Length: 358
Image 1 (tube, one colour):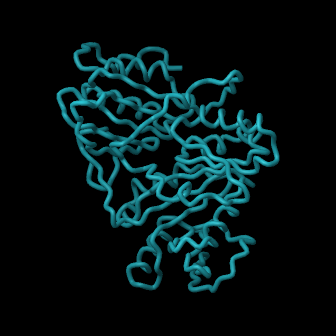
Image 2 (tube, one colour):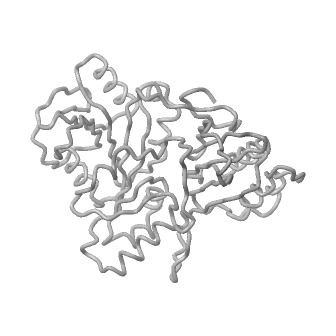
Image 3 (cartoon, one colour):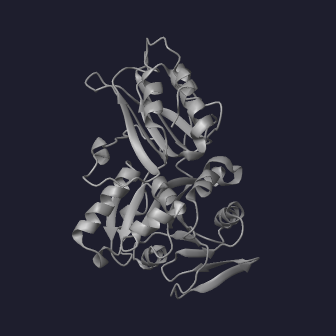
């Protein structure tokens, strides 16, 4: 895949995607209706953090921000807050408004260092995330840093049970912030955190009260950086006594057997072709047979990026680790196919697709 871009097919882990440090980092804030997104954004906008942040919202609503309107065109308006942050309401095309913001930044009409995008409560974050993989105008100026999902603890159980969008919001997250825990008991909070961790093994789950989150839990998460320091905690996958059958789930594949890169590419490409719409997030560090360097990759549904990682040191425990988060993904099929990607195995991993998938 070309530098700065991601690809859908054919999958190639031998072509590398890199991010330029000059690109503006973007944080996507999502969460179901009433989860506290606007409260969180008001905290970010009002904090004395010294950072100039452009916040894109679907509606300002009663945001309570004392500001001066700098620009109004079409159905959008851009305003500047007292601490220099920028807030933009968007009812049109995200790609267009990001392009407009980039051009105004280049011309000096606006000044900001990063962008936060708030989705509506019923939004699927997938298409927004994919914008940063496939739209040339966006890829040129921005990089997606991470997805933060707010979860309303008081109403989480019925919301997750009844609304597919809420489950997808959890599945896409790099950081999950649980709000309103003061309205439920400690046991309920613990059970909710365990449920969220089962749904998304790679996201850190934290509680937040009245939107007062640490900025480190919102900005510079590096969730979409292809980082050779990738680590995945299998403890997240330990089942508590009570199991809730969510259709969004996660699993980790680990092996110390070196992998055959060509077979791995072919197998993952086939799985993306078949299950890509349900593969919300996946990310891995791969030990390739005969290579002294890690390969790092990650994807969002059918969009995949990769890059070379650090070299293996003699003292390193060489291991491939891949996490999958998605909707009813057939873990046994994925595991069996990945096992057949090991160096020296002669069975074609594509053959697992002829087995019952679900």
